[in-house]
Image (cartoon, rainbow, N blue to C red; front, side, top):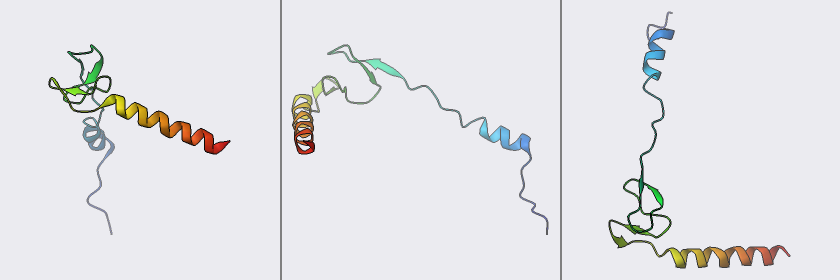
Length: 75
């Protein structure tokens, strides 16, 4: 039995020509001037659209505390 659904190399290549990755658009945070992805919260200051969304300071303190506990447990 012959497989009638086979695609030749040319047709496969034409399909894959649309699978390329696109460059993500970077923008500058208006508050801290750090580069960030468009329509995302700034990782540096935690603001989006002029208001604070993430408490970055609390997040870094929690991360340092977790790292300290992990290093002390390894000793």
